[in-house]
Image 1 (cartoon, one colour):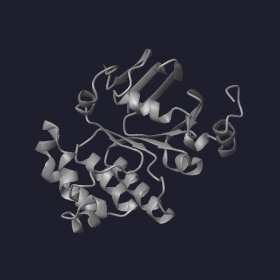
Image 2 (cartoon, rainbow, N blue to C red; image 1 turned 45 degrees about the horizontal axis):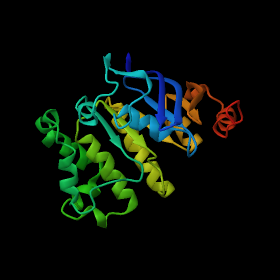
Image 3 (cartoon, one colour; image 1 turned 180 degrees about the vertical axis):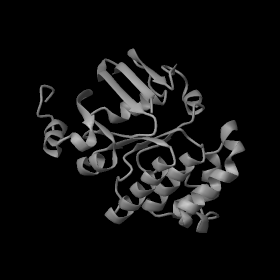
Image 4 (cartoon, one colour; image 1 turned 135 degrees about the vertical axis):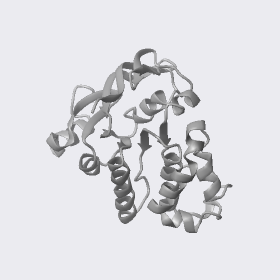
Length: 240
């Protein structure tokens, strides 16, 4: 396996305030990488920069050896990079099926739409049952499933998940992460952004800890001490 995503020396400003400081990360093809951090750590800024919503002041981002720094969000999505945003965002006034078809808007995805739809309905049978219902009538867990399923409809190489477990019951979280693992076994690469340390280390191959815009710790998840990650997470370091 080789590196799918490389982030080198990323610095990002919001006006006069710096949000990311010399952030470097690598995501191996076929892996699950977690980015752990509290509110205000810079996680959303990092994801939005990867997706072309923010432009970095310096540094670069490469996907499959291609420089995608500063490309538009639509062009980045065209590389088959999908994102499930924080808060299970779906199109509430559209049906479940319409939401899913919105995920297959890329020319490459339209060719595999039937195949991806079958995959989605096999993985999330409740979405098939509710395919004609408005997304606004779904439960929080079902909306999160729909958000993931919509990403799958893109036939993505990489899925970036922002706070998958936010506001969900433990049993639902377990089910959703089981689907992440299943998709990963099918070859999809994942970046998981989480606040929950134990879950992040459990499901990821490699983890980064982000504090106040700085990467303060990284390593293979199985080799990272939960206590050390907790210390870094709460800013028991020079950036506190």
